[in-house]
Structures are given as structure tokens and as C-alpha cells.
Length: 341
Image (cartoon, rainbow, N blue to C red):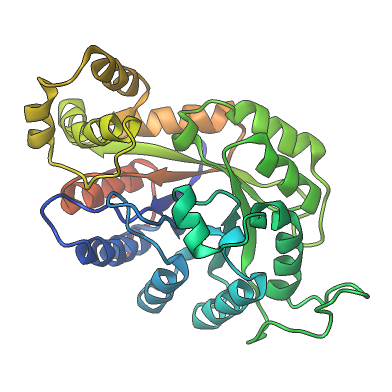
């Protein structure tokens, strides 16, 4: 198999029966683990008002990760930019760049990462999403230290602290919109394959590459996809661990955002599911990238070949944080990563 970079996406999933603060502690531990294993990036997400995934402030979590890791790139996947001032985000990430020079990724998205009421509580300006392209342009100038164009209202404002390196700016998305914007601005692009269950991936990447306008920092298009995957010693064990996500997905379809339950608790609830809910689970089982390490690595290599990628970002949920760490370790070994001993 050809060499391919693998990275991690962590959403800080909360487990039933445990305090949510432990999800943040587990994120810090997993970041150190992935750093030692040799993963290329470690991205953390932003969601709000959810009892399932409790990473609400990626820039804060990134600071802790940056201070306790040594070689892995650290990024947001992403900052939901319409909630915030582009200048403040630029300042936060310039500080992060000062903590870990040359290791910071700034992934931004347009989606709210929450429900409508929560989005309004974060930013009462209801048309904020329409300003996303201009926000990205301003952010691009501020994080890179390149002056804003003449006539810009904020021409004389800089985002401090400045330094010899600057964060890599990424556009995140799960539709053609983000792909086209990333192409127009000449920026790297990450597609949320796990969110759409693969739908639209090929079209979005084709648009991105075909419409790409080279930029000074990124003369060629650079794309990746974020995939949900889980490995264990055997396929049977991995399928058992998957039941946690199956249970969550049934609740998600009903508008619930509940903490992750154990596979055993998911088994106990299965008898009460409707035919529609069982169909949802069967569909998930058919598409899930789960199994032993060679099986999962093989599927990921197939996706990389299909979409012409040299990097894939892996998202994994388990009720037991140890099983999640073990999955990343198995896949790191399967991909030939150079672990720190």
C-alpha cells in the first residue's frame, strides 16, 4: 500500500453516567496518545447545546493540547465562524501559533454546530452566515499577517502576536458551497464524509479541484475527508463497540443529543426499537468502516485511492475511552506510523 498520512478528529464525546468534564480530559489524553503514535494532525470540533459531544471551545482545548504535545499538528474542525468576530478568531489562533509554531491549523465552517436558538444566543445577528466569505477573506489576511486591501475599513488593524510562521487556514464543509469557496480562495478543503455518509463527496472534490485558483501558499489544491472508523482485534469486537454509535444514531434521528451508552446498554434497548429504527441501524452497519486493523486500513486506502487523497482524518467514538485509544493505536500500526517509544 502507498504511504498515506492519517490524522484524528476528536469531538469530545460524552459518556452516559460520567461527568462531561471527563470528555475533555479524555480528549487531552487521546491527543497525547496520537502524538506519540505518529498521527499527522489532531483536530477538535465545535458543537453547542449537545449532551453527546461537548467540545464547545476548540481554541481553548487546542491551547492545552499544544502545550502537552511535541510534533503533531493541532487544529480546529472547526471554528464556526459566523458566531464570532473574524479578528478575535485571528488573535486566538495567532496566540496558538505562538504556543506551537508551525503546528496550528485553523479550520473554519459556516454551519451553526447547534440548533437555531443556540446559534441565535451565540450571535443574534441572523444574517451572519451570509457574511462568511468576507469573514474568511479578513481572517486569511489577519492570520497570515498580510495587510488588508486598500480601502478596507480595518486596513490598519493587525492580529497579534506576529511571528515567522502562521496557521494553515482550511475550509470545512459537507456540501458544494464550501468546496467552491475553498477553490476560489486557493485554500485547503476538508469534506465531512462521516456526516453525509459519503454522499456528495465525489462531486464536492471534483468541483474543488476543477475550480481551484492557485494561491501563493497553496499553489495546488489540497483536500482530505473526515471518516468515521473503528478498529479492534476482531471484526466481532469492533461490531460490538459500534453498537454505541448505533444507539446514538437512533436517538439523533428523533432529535435527541444524548450521551453515549455502553454496547451492553444499547443491546438492552434494541428490543424496543421500531422497524424504522432497526432499518436505520442496518443501514449504518452496512456502511460503517469497522473491523480488525487490516480490514479498516484497507477500506481507508480504498477511499484514498477513489478520491485521489494522500491523507484521511479519522473520527472514532466509543463508550470506553480505552477502546478508542486502542483503535487509533491499531490503525497507526497498520499504516506504518513511527511511534515514539
